[in-house]
Amino acid sequence: TETGQILWSGSIAEGANSGALVNNGIVYVNAYTQENPYPTNLYAFNASGCGNSSCQPIWIAPSGNASGNLIPAPAVINNIVYVGSYSNGAVMYAYDTITGEILWKWENSSSAGGFNSSTTIANNIIYSATTDGNVYAFNASGCNNLICNPLWTYNMGNGIVTSSSPAVTNGII
Figure 1 (cartoon, rainbow, N blue to C red):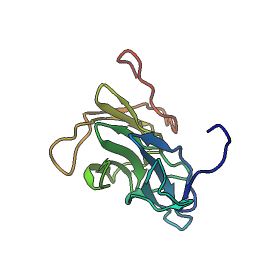
Figure 2: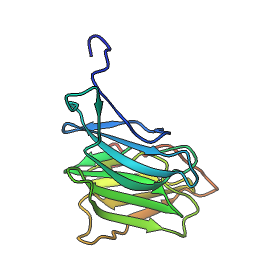
Figure 3: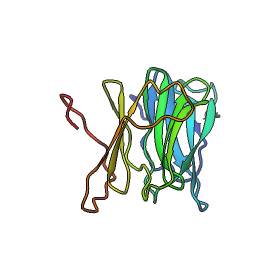
């Protein structure tokens, strides 16, 4: 960090268009390929590197498709990494941080928009917004099933389209 010298790099699909997240010694990057329907993958790298200048991911997990060229950045709490996507509607994924295994997901194929805002976590609740103006809240602990429904959904109305991440302060979104 003092010299700006690259310590290591890792190969990901073309089109990484989200911020990276570093948590507990792992770097997470959500990236898409440049081929229609723009499939995305969530990559996990050891933040300390691998002893070489080029490192392979610890794991790679499919994370849906890109919504336009906006790719949500992941969020982590309690050893679970969350990322939303657009894959024939809105899809929210929860992955094990160590293995990349999908712990649960939620799909809304009737949604006109996908998740393109980064996930916000507050008080064990996951918040994210879709391109069709809906804000969703999920229990970060899941629901003891592979498919978990949102705790609630709010439509902002009037054709509002959002790519901003929800902000939470003092229990207010």
